[in-house]
Length: 252
Ligand code: SF4
Image 1: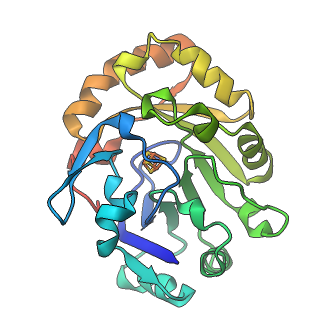
Image 2: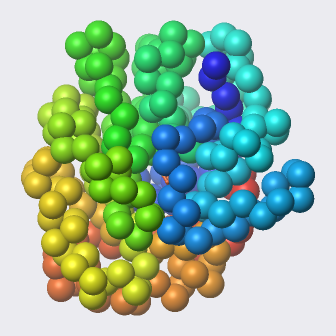
Image 3: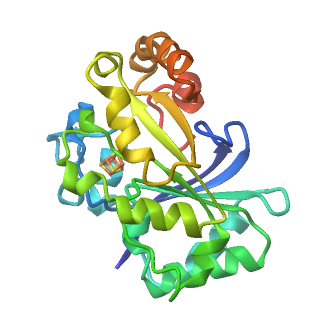
């Protein structure tokens, strides 16, 4: 069962391709919860749900009634016709965790069609889902933004850091880069060691660090300490432009 939460045309707000006009597809479901990020969203049933800044695309129990069940690849491809898009516009597949659908027939057909039409496709992934690059070589054509979760997510280490998967993506994909979400409080707590223990699985892959937060105020509070951390360690700072501009609004 393939679920889409929303689609929107905007600019990429994070990472290497910040500022690039992109059509986003947000898929529903994730293999993690990341309650450590402390974002709270009110579900349609009125309950307060704790998780990450896209908890509405993660938590099936409380939000899946609002998700769209996709029955064939054409339904996804037709979404491109709803917008006035530049030719070959970038496509960003996000979530939740879009790669929980990595083996799904409809998902692979959709990816294949996008590639044939000349679109650059980027996955925003937590880097913990196995991709079978031999069975589905189409994945070698795409870009992977590896947002591997740190201990501030409160997910167990064995679940969030899978060295073999990071290595496989880093060595098979057309392009990959790391993208870490960091809060000011984590910076002195062995963060450098934690990041090093992740990036060692794909040492040539560029690193971007972005301020944690689901709101403009949280992002702003974490920005300056993170810039100082990036300056000291030689990592790239990435803003979270969409949150800074549109705050907590969705679909932008
Ligand atoms: S892995 Fe990403 S989408 Fe999934 S719960 Fe964590 S932050 Fe949210």
